[in-house]
Length: 244
Image 1 (spheres, rainbow, N blue to C red):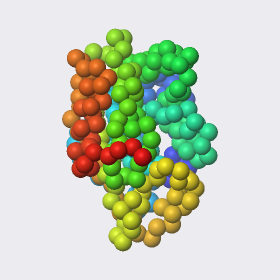
Image 2: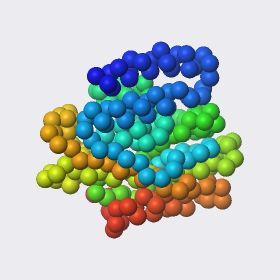
Image 3: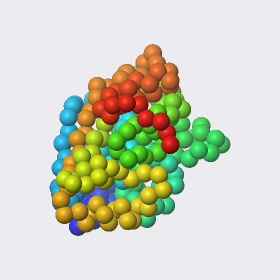
């Protein structure tokens, strides 16, 4: 009910926001943040944030473990997700991504220049874009190597000066007595059954969102940026993981 009400309220809010602020989104982000915190509270999933959100122009990168990341990371700070285009057609999830102004990308090389321009325009408008550099989700107990190509978009000369990227770790703790991977949604797991399993749980665990110090983009290339962000997040998970 809270989520549905939040979705219904954001539609007129977005309309007025667009008229008053143009491309900037000073109202949408905080609204979504409040709604996501309320939804997590209604589900009974414990939540806390450690660290200080990035100030100034920049983006956020995080490990990807579950569909719950949408709620968890939006609750941590006002962000706009970067997602593969296929997600726009996923039932249920597609509604959330649309109303929260998710930035969709495709791997079609013919659209690379257009997508890069749109990406830069959103950063210049002050949008705090968040993406998952693993390129897939995991069981929540490990972090896969980051894909350096996804960091290329932050090296555009037209982007704001002082741009930084903040690594963020989402650390899930399963309900008492449950598999440590309870909240993880990965590989070929179907969304519907996992969603119902989580919703039907009588007791829940929690999640800690750890905000690491922002990493300045200046003076780095895509590989050094990727490595620095990966090491920051991996430090919360122990040994390096290999992609299955």
